[in-house]
Length: 283
Image 1 (cartoon, rainbow, N blue to C red):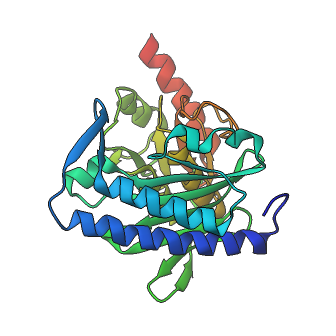
Image 2 (image 1 turned 45 degrees about the vertical axis):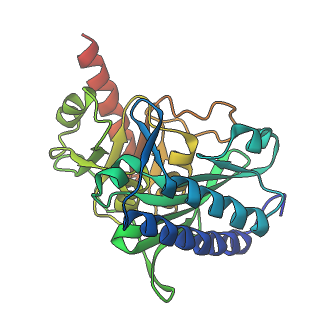
């Protein structure tokens, strides 16, 4: 499938990707339920059998689903997706988003699949295995929570229009020194630490929280694509901390300028607060 896709084409892809993510989530939970070894790709960057098994399953399922779309997956060798930026579309896959939380056994981890077309996120699937919850969204066409049996409930971001008292999510494992200044600058309630970019995105998309803010480095493009698509499909906004959209045809896969997901109506206010907080911290 190449070229511009219709909303119905995207929903077909989203539903098939959701099925693959649910299957991968079962693999993840089988590992979670038994003793497992933890290795480290780099300092503070754990990987487990669950990451690798989920990655292999998702790449196999997605390659069968859409043979012409490259798969940029966290646990794949970069040579497997070399040249992806020259394609009109690419999958961005995090087979186990929140591996630190998986290792800590606190349930805050997810399986994530996002699709980007012409450099922009267009659909997202986020499955929270330990929560027994799944989410799917197509930008411009809506977002849903999917219950077992495929019963679907429409989800939407919160209607908040001001920052005073807003609920803000920040990383559990990567909370930085800028967060206290950011909370003060926004007037939000105390920042809530939470694992998994995807789960924080889902909590914004469902209206449980108003803001997810990660200043500075915010993971990789596979941490952003499904998160962005789900939040935007639910009526919100997701950009870097400078207000620029994520570019998924960049050869640099690192999210170097943060990630900000909101209900949309407060997005510009959050970005301005982040600028103020950064300025105060540098003085």
